[in-house]
Image (cartoon, rainbow, N blue to C red):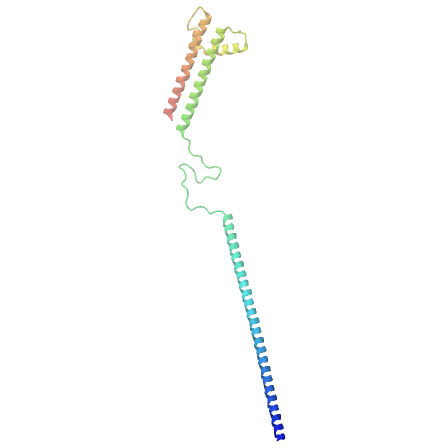
Length: 219
């Protein structure tokens, strides 16, 4: 009986030991499986990170290439525009209408001038002559009046200014010098030289008008 009980206990111990060994082996297998799965997951994450970094780098490289291409296109366009501006413009296809009487085949610097308007030229000359006649007649009338004033005041006849005015007055008085014979010489100078001054004023006025009228008719 004791031997049977011992054998049973030993068999039970062996079976318990086997079970514990089996349990330990299964636990080790599970731990090894878990570690392998963790390694696989870490490898997958690293590969995914590498692929994402490659994609990002490839995307950046593509964007840089696109920007470079865009910049080169813009530069080429700017260069072409500058060249087109620097090139001389082509001659216009439409010819401008040349004025009548102008020689279009004449060389540059020797082109024929347009014809002069004769009527306008005559009218300008007439106005200038009329102004000159009026001014000259007015000046002569002023000289005669000045001589009359000098005679009435009794200025020194030997003075240079008096001699100059008297010489001009004697030259332009013409036939009015002895028109009226008056006993008083001063009064005679006033009358005769005064009439000469009026005469020159009338000559200047009517002469200028006559010249203007002729210029208007001939223009």
